Length: 190
Image 1 (spheres, rainbow, N blue to C red):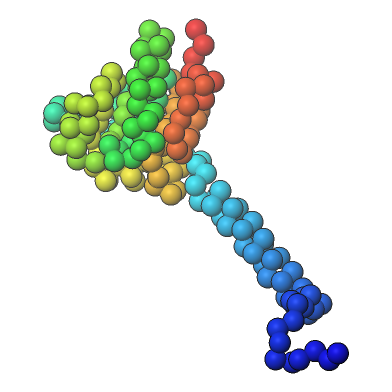
Image 2 (spheres, rainbow, N blue to C red):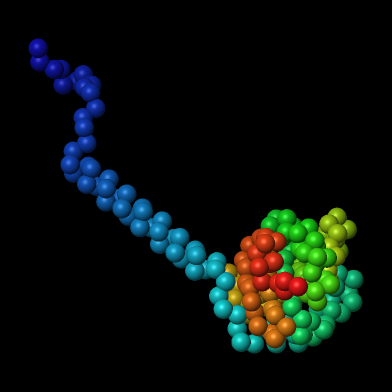
């Protein structure tokens, strides 16, 4: 019995040519994914802080949410945890209770914490009415993004945390939510 050409037959197996094309496009997709991961890692990984970043921070005076000046010069000679954040940033909000607890834990060891808000005073004030924060919060507005870039935050993402030792050396830079154990590893032990 002859097969009727108008009757659908079983699905033919892929020809070597089709398999070759599929393998080619699969290899291209894998190479693109790897390239994307490498580029993403380079863009979002902290770069070295500029030589002038710490001095620029110490020369900065920013208002708090009530308009009172916070002189960063007062932090010189201490271990300082600087957290760049914003009230609209989910990971920033999530890490605030941990940073407050660490501030209380390390306060007696001379470690200072300061949050630099990349938003308006009114938004930061409204945020602190909902989420209590025990350390000073400065208002830098969106201009604070340039300060984060000087500390190696090429992508300008938030949160961004920097730890500076008493000699003014940057000991840690972290893009994204910082975990308490990451900070404990670089903060003074005793």
